[in-house]
Length: 54
Image (cartoon, rainbow, N blue to C red; front, side, top):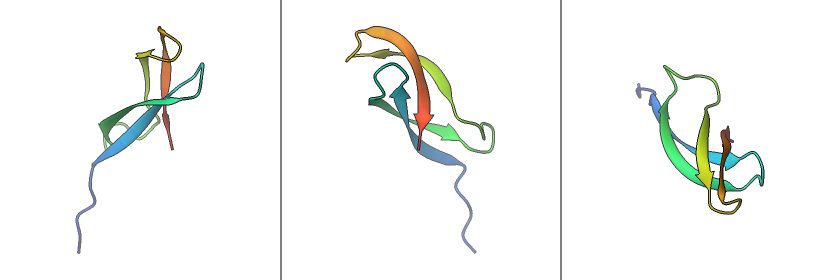
């Protein structure tokens, strides 16, 4: 029986322009909800809220 992976790769999308700018990892066991981080968007040229996209 295979062990389920806790860490997964996710993509972060800018909430202003909706472009997917970042790829990062998260632990599904500790953070089951979608992540939200304030990151720099090179297309908007400003720090914006980035949400985990599916």
